[in-house]
Image (cartoon, rainbow over all chains, first blue to last red; front, side, top):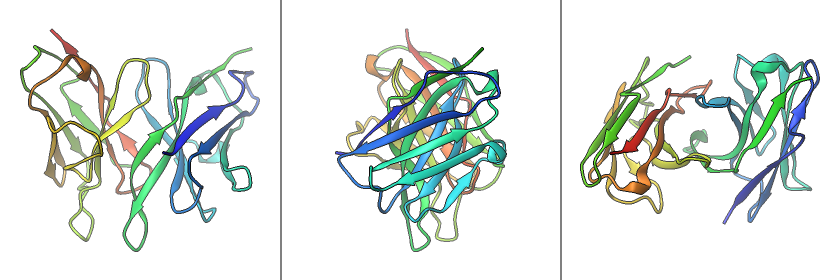
Length: 123
Length: 112
């Protein structure tokens, strides 16, 4: 059974770069989308972006200029970087596997999700 | 971007009674093959979201059959036939038809 685990610093200073990794166990990075989703404290869910196993990426336009998602198949993990962070980037960051269907591999749901990593932006 | 609107935002239900949550999208979620790219998640207190329903009406593996999803196009409903104590949490709908993937605001279900 595939499991995902986020890791990275829990505190980041304003204007610096937030970096998280998601380690995948019980399966490989092939044939799926690998995504990041965040949730500010007490608020709803915001999709950040995903990377396909081929390396193709897609980001939320609201964050596109500051976000990079990458794969490391040798270590079976994928990573998130968000540059120039501010207090509004404080959130629980989740990684998740995206299932796709059809000839065009259209993503249609996320499962499983990692347990989440709280990242606080503060000086 | 497709806007997802849920209602109600909170509900309080007696155990054993039914519950219903509505999700409306600003654009149709049907693809050219007739599939509705609408997902329902439940986020239990202190946990990450777990999938309940995908493609509008398909129950995910391990999800009790008291949960059902219906609807098409822009109007969708999640129904719980008989609410149990373990069903407390926040329910989210999500559209996956087009990027950016977007979520509803969430509906908090509590037990009376």
